[in-house]
Length: 322
Image (cartoon, rainbow, N blue to C red; front, side, top):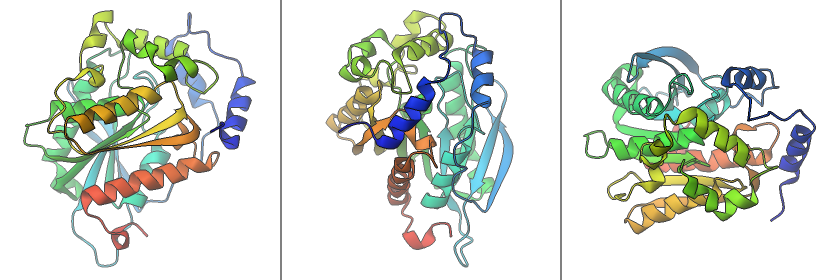
């Protein structure tokens, strides 16, 4: 279908702004420019949020815990979703993805723990996946302290964060930490040159929010050497053994260079006997779920994502946040 009119209007507004020169762009400058941009809608209200320090692979990490409103008389431990933000392994953090985490907490009825993993180029691969694995181990160990049920854990992320969520599921398979679900929003699952051959990478290379040039720049910041792209911790789509992984919900966007690899991962999980639901969002571009208040489909996609989490956690509508 054609590009959604709201997405088109946003992309046209972005096209009128100066474009980064990725041949000379510094990560610090790109972060500063992103921080100066107007924020999207703040997401749903939650009962409480708390900034925490949790254990990463090489020291403490900042994290933020979102607590949905309590159902009447409900003091039982909540499910817990560990969330990894997108940003190409280089940009973003707790504040940039606050609205997604708030909305997922409110609509799923789960606690959401957002993790501020180390960013490149200051901390190149494998710092991010190492931190992601360490964060989920910490969450499983400290679930009771957080008011969470350690038997109902899941992971989620968007774009680069979807990569980390998938890597965590692969890395912790057989560890004794039983993850109930993996929610991957337009995930970046293949950092290798092979990804550039896909139809979506070619057809959506420019003009749809995330460009091929930007992806190349992210890879150059993130990977310590080109050979790292073949590592399944950088490119979980390359994992050959996909048996025994948690059920997955994968949301892709029609006009996204990463669309095909997200859908290929869902198909690979299905071939391995896994439960994977792939939903392509028509008319949308990469990152649309963050664009609450600008693109109506953002809220619809988060509704679908939350429904998949409720099903995985066994949460009924009456137990959601008020």
